[in-house]
Image 1 (cartoon, rainbow, N blue to C red):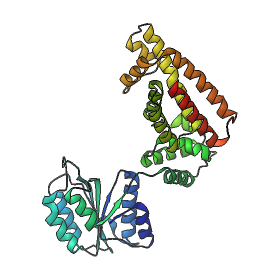
Image 2: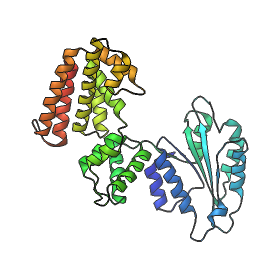
Image 3: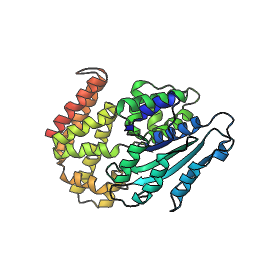
Image 4: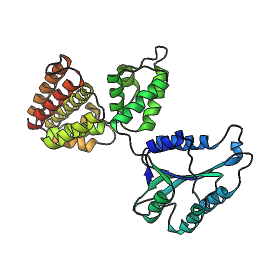
Length: 347
């Protein structure tokens, strides 16, 4: 049975520590935090941790045997030993695997009688559940999966992180912050620390401060929405809009990004009609790095009159949201954005 991070937290609160853990999943920040928590709880006050804590990286063929040999050793002036094995990888294709079926006799021998004075933690960067060894570790160890946080848990986690950092942030600003950083908790944690330092001495985190210091990681998704609108792909546009809003994007901020993309497309289209060189167009619309081909292709497909009409509709929606026409608050703003997308995709 694979545990969730909530299950693990409950076990640790009961001071229940398993002899062997396998931790895996894409949410590496919370995974690594859990490993630290298990390690810290495994030692008692006064234990000599330096003599009883070891890390093996599976960088050479003998690292895994050495790790299990270390797990068999008795602790020295400590209640327990903690052995951490990092870079465990069991992939779908087997490419660059660091643990394979050749290691099964070694692992099964230890798991049949694990040392009661050792906590062995296997940290997996990839743990395919179909491959034999992946299934084996999931079934025979205390396996804990760290899946990405859903919107509710992400909001709760980030809100607590701001509070723990001694800062104040309102709900709207919090949602705006999440709309920029996405679901990567490690990045969110780093950005919270940066904002907490920058917010001194008031300790108030504002939207202006976020816009100034936190890069937007969701620009690609937002342009996907714009591309669907330009191409008239209404179902795809609505599906993309729902995902962006469900992920926590603030409607007004999203509207600003849509407006920005449409203005850039309009400028690019006008320059294309004048046969301006690609480099000149890219410079005019601040088009750098990856995504140039996709952007220019969207501009090439677009109709100039439709782009101009879209900008007028966006301006009307902006006014409607700011004056609470059609409903106030986040729900009213969301309805206005949804109506706009329907109009733009049909336009």
